[in-house]
Image (cartoon, rainbow, N blue to C red; front, side, top):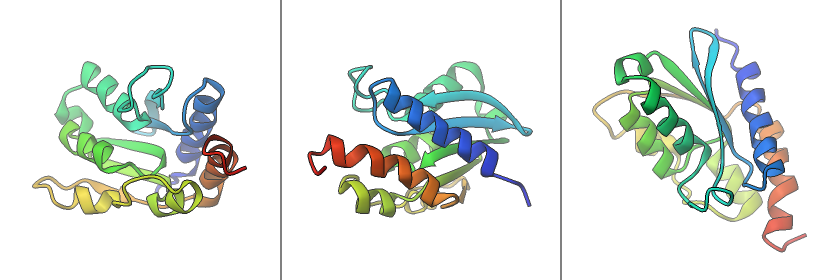
Length: 156
């Protein structure tokens, strides 16, 4: 069985970096054959675009560098389960597998935001199979959200 933890921990570190850079706590990376080939953070505030989720930024970057055949053998690791928008982008990009740490449900419990649509619900509707693994290291990933959202939603 593949060890996802180092990649998920890097995605969680990217989520912390996003906060340090003035954005929301989400990070993702793309892995091929055990090597990280791309990294992205949430940039909704600094990029002045509410669609600049970490996974969207990663998919856009991946599309600039790789074709769908290459991406089919890649894994997207992300600190938090992708929203419906990001799940759709992952599907259309051709990425073959996605592994997440914190679940959408747990994020909703902490922040009270989100669409509350599990990524599997979106990804299982397509003609192409995208393997979904998670949640893994959920408590570690959730800790970043527990530090961020109460302060930013005025609940602290």
